[in-house]
Image (tube, rainbow over all chains, first blue to last red; front, side, top):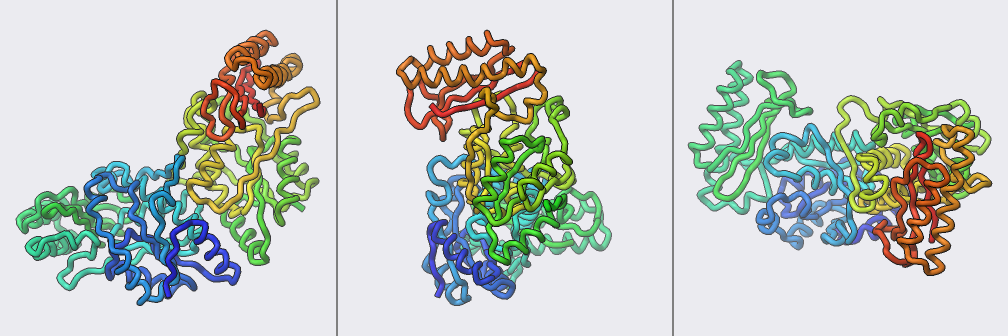
Length: 279
Length: 279
């Protein structure tokens, strides 16, 4: 049975009981609309912790676009059934007033890694992420936290934050889960039309081609330009960014130095998709 | 024996050992130059915790004035002797590079309570306080933290921060310790000349007179004006602020509503003194 908890106080008591018996607590922070990517995180948590909390909170503070927040898919009953099947101990699903009660006035911000890409295109996004993640770490007091590599920049922001603020949690990044045609799993994929869904895998294909070309010695700029052209020709409306960057610091790279990461955000119809791969 | 620890990693191991045996850890964050005010915090921690950590870190991030940082008194050997005498378990005294290693990029900020008074006169001060306190809570994993009411606004910022970020620590405010003539104990008092030291108690006297007048029904503005005049006539160079405020939210009060607090900052010679009392 997965127990649903909605208040930080009730969660605190639950976790205190676990800790008294020496249990290692793992947490998987999510915004719900769970797919197999999330479930792979829950399974990683299950295998590396004694107790597993999955959190579902569609965090208004990290949405720069109110429309995107409104349209974000929500189906808690379905999510709960999936977590039950995976043996998750607690679904922590607080409401907005529990997370940001009246008088709330604090913010956690991270400079550097949060600046480019998602940070540049979604002002305030990573302040929202850093703040809510800090809160979730405090509320769950987890010893291990599992994040998907799908949100690669977010993972680097969280790692930086945990190191900088000495939060006693071990952050574990887990590989992106993909559909069989290569499309990275995302809660936003359900908003693609059938025609858009058929186009979407072109994003990952273009990334793979660019990564291969760069590894084979092609000039970085030429490889990125070719990929960008392929994405647009496939039917995407815009490419917001397509960058080769240092995998940890996210500094831009003009030529290949390991470990490097290729990261993209592109808009298909009215859905914004992101992806990234190692180079 | 008070053990001196300088690295977050060594402290983590020490605390982990304590926690395995179920000990409740208390922390007293300080900037050193310890006086009886600090020691009263250490004694409160001793009586309300199983293990006591006193931290000494002159936090560059909270000094808006480099001269003030340079002049801030430091005497660790003397501090350690005092802590030994009071049975403190650990003195945690990290260097700046341990607290802010290369690549450090995070900041915790609190709006509202941090805005007026010290926040207005010392830009960035409370960001520095909020960030280092969050770090010290993470490093010490203390269950209880002891702060002096002397820094009343700081205490409210820390309370707000702990509530907002769900940090699992109980914040305990302890009464201001005063010299027999009423001067609030402060590490900065040693920088007063003999003549200035004789003038300094006028600050607390003027505060007491204003508080009494306000409680007796005098108009707030008249009482504050009279106190300000008395402070300047006593020999202070300037009064940076002298405010009646809600004790928790620090909203300004035009008339007396409990709980209220009278707060002051004034400059004597080149030493900036602060104080506050309940009204």
